[in-house]
Length: 210
Image 1: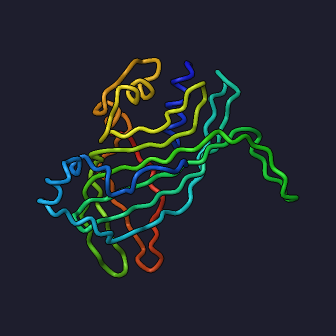
Image 2: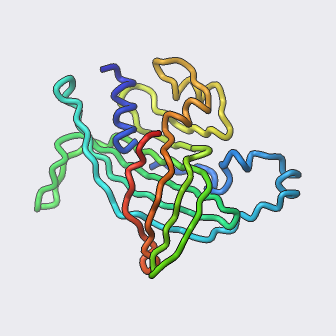
Image 3: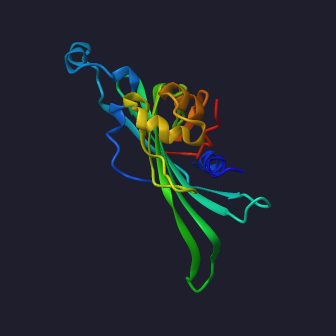
């Protein structure tokens, strides 16, 4: 298994850095001039902000490699008055023995973190204290990643403001790729989330690839 293959497998298993732009600003549908945006009068008022349950996933490259990793993940969903959403997944990666003793000692190696923001449109229905959100497949994605198995981390990627340098990092050993190809590689089909309105929470949802 090549280094890049391991990295992609790990990213898929859980694939958090800070510094991304505000959630409502990276939708491809909003990549217009300020004049056009003013004319459209898009309402980016936040209408909901929800948090998932916590999730832990494990990865092992055995027997090809001794590498193993645990990824601790959390998701949030923001909804906006114009019918758009931003789903954020934050992953914190650790490798090592990953033992947590009763005396409070532990052994692990921080392996970096990923924050991935997916943008699209949604519909919502309410019934008996439950809010059902149906999220479209993403139309854009932004990533901040300090995670790396090899020598190079993904860093900052944004399909709404793609550059050749981003394409080179995202493509790795396979060569430079386009924003469309990268989006397709990390996208997911339509998702349905059930939010408990009393707590503002929903079950963590593994984002399967399209």
